[in-house]
Length: 127
Image (cartoon, rainbow, N blue to C red; front, side, top):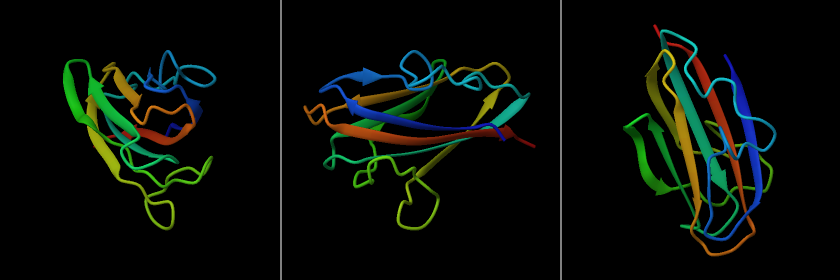
């Protein structure tokens, strides 16, 4: 089960980032292209800014998996989202075919350069 935990600190005001690829904090995620015949992806995200301050979208090629939507607010800086408990965040799950590229886009819409985004991304073989 390849996972990645991503922490993006102080995202620039009104900027757009792609944290799985070109704007990865350390290096692009090795599994942004599906390594399995069919892969089940799960993505959870939160940010520590004001409600409506960060938006997220997910695409596989030309297929829009998650239309640009508000990212869950109220996260604690640096604390990763979880499926349950105090840091619970909506989980976005979808299937991808072999070599499909997952494009995750984050937009800072609050007009501040202090928003921090925490992401958990997972892929595993789908039956």
